[in-house]
Image 1 (cartoon, one colour):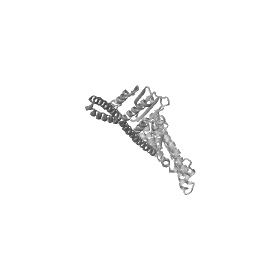
Image 2 (cartoon, rainbow, N blue to C red):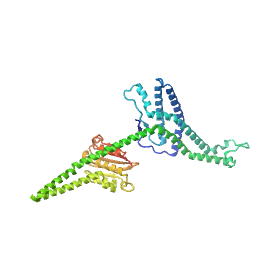
Image 3 (cartoon, helix red, strand yellow):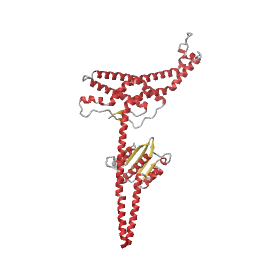
Length: 434
């Protein structure tokens, strides 16, 4: 399966108009010779391989042609990144199996769908390249010639025949020097003003064809893979949460309720024979009832804390910090709790879950004396950081407490990073898309 490998995590910043104009112009102008060379190489290679397909020689030639198309496609992917203002991406092509013989290696590109898309783009790109090249050259030529017409008007021969008329005369502006220079300069200025727009459009047209054929299918497959992983992570996180809830109920409230029922039964039997002992048993039952209610409230806070719904993420995290067994420093943007700054409920719930579970792990395993929680927006992401000064050694290996956090974050489309060298300190960082 072909997937996409991105070489940078964030798209480059938009350059200035003059710089983008030069980038787009260079992309379009260089596109014609590259398109011509690509057309010639691939058409010749494809024709020869098809003509010799009945012989053994035609298959290696076809494989070599596909490899050549792949190389030309890589050049185009490298060029179009600056035009589209997106990270450079490259599909992961099908690779030969370890130990494969020569013929199996020859057939590898022939069985790869992306290689055929590269070949089709290498042949079809010439059609678009010719049109965009002509438009770009014409617009640049008229812009420069018109804007600088005043500098060389004196060197242009003037019409001498009775039927010879220049553009100014045809428009009824007369044959004066001022009319000629003014009209041609105005035309040049118009083309100069619209030059960035027209060249940008030509570059985007050429780059869009390349994106659709060279990375579009692979990006779609990669997106499907990511969605499938998120779905699996969501199912895994939900199953883990249900198992944990079931275990907590079984080990806590359920045991207390069983003891409560036994205490009440004993108190009923003691009422006639020993009223004083029955009173003590009832007092113990009342205590058990209070403890059970406290545990149920704690469990409900872990599922859907009311303070998170009513007052927002900062207040909910402050409540967690207040219940902490060690000092916890909060660095949370207060705007996240205002009506205008509230996040999507799914993002809030995930951020709350990350902090609550990470602090639980700190209390159980880290042997830390203090912890830090920082939550803030960073562009289109919410970054949640939980750090401690404990013994370190935390990791995302299966079976450890951080696995459930990672599944929950991945299900929300985010990424979890754990930095925890032996000896500490530890930082758990979650980046959640808004």
